[in-house]
Image 1 (cartoon, rainbow, N blue to C red):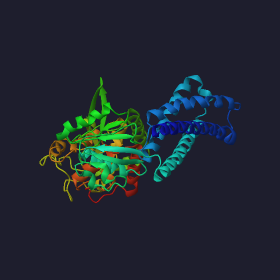
Image 2: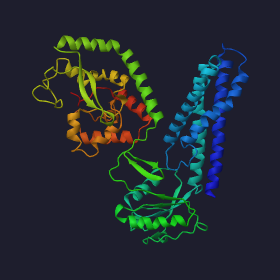
Image 3: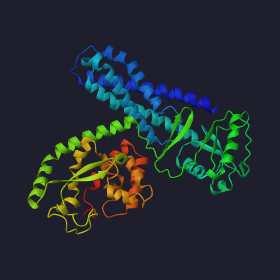
Amino acid sequence: MLKKHERTFSFMQQLADAAAIAAAWLFSYYIRFEIIGGAQAGLGLFYLNLTPLIILLTLPFYFRSGLYDSNRYYSWHREILSVMISVSKGLFSFIILFFFAAPSRLSRITLMLYAIMALISTISTRLVSMNIIKSLRSKGKNLRHIILVGSSQSMMEYVEAIYHIKGAGLCIVGWVDSEGTAAKYKIPELKMSDISTSSEITIDSDTTEVDAVIISYPPDKQKKQQEALKISHKLLTPIFVLPYVAYTFIGNRIEDFEGIPMVKVNAPSMSIFDILVKRLLDIGGSAVGLLLLSPLLLIIAIAVKVTSKGPVFYGQERMSLDGEKFKMWKFRSMRIDAEEKSGAVWTVENDDRRTPIGAFLRSTSLDELPQLWNVFIGNMSLVGPRPERPVFVEKFKDEIPAYMIRHKMKAGITGWAQANGWRGNTSLEKRIEFDIYYIKHWSLLFDFKIIFLTFLKGFVNKNAY
């Protein structure tokens, strides 16, 4: 019954999205041609006929983004981001299709208005739908009843996640072979009679209102898991296995090779489209930054040159995505022989190797501005884990757990760690923790948040010297 209702709701959501796209398209035409005016007349029928096409070009991206799947496991932030990406892809496809067919008849203002209107209308309808569903679930309706089998660490994390995601509508009605784990959680729907210490599973899918069975055992009890999986031959109820994967920090991805499931460990969740959009943001942001800051860059360059002997810029080898090495540029803030005797060392407070203007440049982060060029040419990103020197990478990778995971993302000028004050002479473990959190929870909105926090809190830091 629940599946039938979900299919009905999915179809209704598709109709609502189609209506939102159509309304956004037609309203954008109305604003451009009727309210703003000053454009070619008589195109009303032309734009009206394009309405079904833009719907057909956009909805497939909604499907591919999982916007019509059950969203019990995802937050509304993720759904809104998926809508933004899908609308962008649909509009991009539409523009590409009509660039050669009718370039002179497509109004750029209308297209920009549509992008804004489509986001507003689609997100609004989805927020209304989410609130309706949340209200139904709070009243005990539209719930998915599940039975748990096993007591692995993954199972415990799953149970905690269920109650962490508000409005998920997941109801645990049984826990088989819990080995006392169930007693640790105060599950309101779960009665003591529903908890079993036996690994024998007896579920009649024809008479029991169970929507899913979740199975998970620790590595040393895989035989029990195999026995539990035998019920999949007898039930129509969906069976899910929570795999136990050790040493995973930023997530996993299931891949299929000729019917053989493979778990890719520590795989970032970025799609090709995400990478492309992030790169376009980097190119645009760095280009604007270099242009607007060019007078300041010139002043700093002159100051560096007249206050000390040596070049204006200092290139230092750093490590970025997948261990790729590159030369990161800075305004020189140290003497040219700074590491001649000591070798590679970190800067310390009141470091006598700094030039007369070097202390100021480092404390205000102005020495980092040439890295906008690194971003523009693709060595770095505006946002990402700060790159480290290879010599220190070799040292830290054996000392700090999961240190190398930070190289799963392109290095950045600023990052989540820096936005929270973890820079300079601060805990390296904390910086890695924040870097891993950033990679695991990456989104474009997260990038914008970090950029905003970087400007809000300023570039001056007491630990930068």
